[in-house]
Length: 187
Image (cartoon, rainbow, N blue to C red; front, side):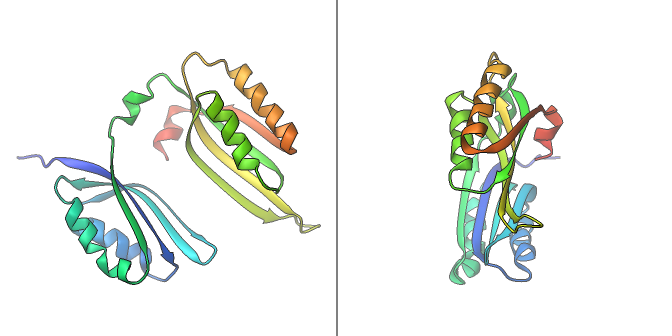
């Protein structure tokens, strides 16, 4: 049996939310012999955003792009990018952590947390944020969950202390817990 070579692509599609959009996008990938490996999809305001890692038979990228012409004609924005497959090897030995942030919403929280991590060489694998209304007061509350990888040799106490300092400066609670390597695969 001849094994078909596959490539990994990151597909992003944004545009107006409508019933059947996810079905249409996944059908295009499936009809070209592709498979959705990991995805995130959400309605953000009135728009819908799809972020997807898909495997595709080698040589199908141009055909896949042409297959989205109808959606592009309807105002959707599409990007397709071939990506590396050696992510696991690149970050071998890095330690996974989950970071939780909670507090009153205000400008700059994400930036300050991300800046502190970047200054220490910590990479963000995934991040989810939300703003909700407090039950009694209706005040805006911010929450963030991030999965990060810390480089080998980086002392957790040092970067966690710096992150706690950022939390005090921007008036949010930040907690850090060790994550299992399986948490990365689940993303």
